Length: 278
Length: 278
Image 1 (cartoon, rainbow over the protein chains, first blue to last red):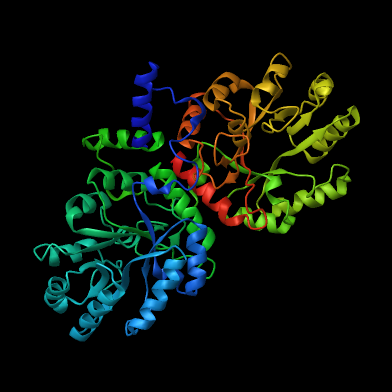
Image 2: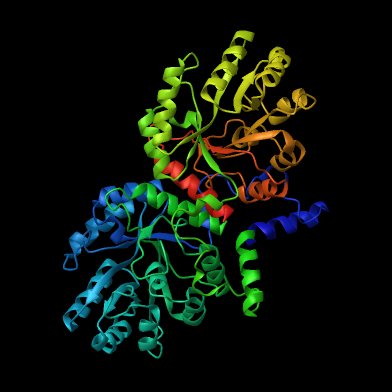
């Protein structure tokens, strides 16, 4: 919204018309074809959304909704993949117009798991892992972050999770660590866990590297996934606070409803977010 | 947006917190499940969208995107249908949760066509026809509007149309007629014809009974249909001016792209509009 107001204000001054009158014809300042390059949040998809889909189908769905960034999950690219396999899969995505921007969510329960995750991330060529190390592995993980210069964004899982039910459970353990240790803030899980999303974004902003965007039916532990915009989360308020802190991290829709028929729900969710951001 | 601001302002006064701070938790004032009952525009679908779909498929698609109002087209309910046929089709829609709110677009090229359209509308039980009478039939159509007390919303078709390329071509011919003679303002066709949408809405407001909502790639005659939000039309400005004039007519998405695979595009368009209205 603010970009349009600025556009109108500068044009209004030029034309000497009252600021509140939109420019004739409503023609947006774009070529009219997929002008999402200028959006506030560069949108992506969280790979888990495609647990029931092949790589080819994933590419097709993402192209249909004009979303080009992907957090790739293990079922599309196993952690023990050879470099040849990695290159083959990345090639498929690249030829399909998809940019693999991170890997994960990867669970780490041993030092070997941590080693494997960072080696994998390096060979895939990303600068971030979305991961979940156990508490005792946090220091070791930090050492790998420094060794590889690959960030870790620790993902909160919701009230049923033993490790990181909410973003606070991540933040309080990592906020004094290397600045490349941060959060993947899962909006829906955080909301179900009773987090104050506005406060979380403001307080943890420098440590929020990635967002998993989803909507849920209520601010309750047993709430269900729903199309973005139909649930209980106020995305206008969320986008506003993200703008306020100047959020420039990544952001992925994670669609966990109708998981054998995800396209319409992803399309509606993406449309809704784009409408809110416009 | 304005409903949320009012909600925050009243709550802020109650809680003595600064107006600019959103309520903790971002929980919207709803039950979190399909809260579209409270939307500014009551959304529908223009039947032509489903030219390649059966009644059953149409119901399924509309339920998927939570849109419940339909402007029914002849291929689903022929103009010469018996009352039995009409009741059967309306029953199907009703059992599927769909409200048939109007009929059309119906083309009228003779008095017989006009007679048939009004008889049909009466038997279907709607209070409005979206139609296109030729110029010489406008007076006769007005007489039928009065006889049946059924409104006619004349649909503008775009720059290639011989009769009503733009909303002005309708308005200038009907603005002194019975108040139940009005416009179905097709946003995309009007935009392609170079209309100033804001001025059209403000100037013709009392005569605008229905909207066909769509996006197009440019303000040019040869522009193509595209998912709402991806094109050149500024829907924030459109929604703002509709609110400004207190628009309380009906509104249907008419999706004319990928017409053999309409669901994802309808979902994205509906999501985008809902995001803009939020």
